[in-house]
Image 1 (cartoon, rainbow, N blue to C red):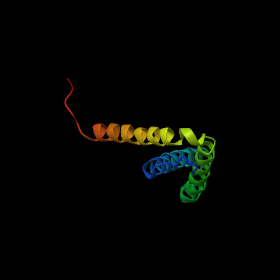
Image 2 (tube, rainbow, N blue to C red):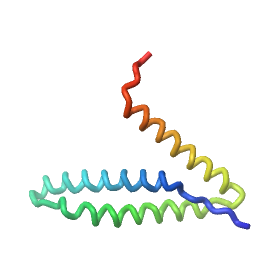
Image 3 (tube, rainbow, N blue to C red):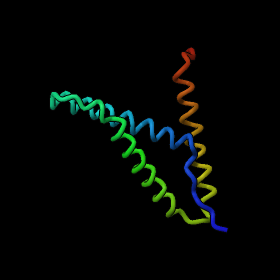
Length: 97
């Protein structure tokens, strides 16, 4: 049975958030440069780009050999855990030292 690399749902959500943020900021900057309001298009552009980015990640993951798929899956889960821990740390004001 062939193993495949699956992006964790949390990582997909993080990619969607990052792309949406970048698109929104880019459209705000472009609106300021053109002096024309483009804010209504951010959702449509972000949705298209999120789909394209996820297709790119799935295409890249499909090149992983089957014997390395479980390792890559665990590394992706580790990335999600590390980013989640960093976000949790940033959301609370832990005392330094």
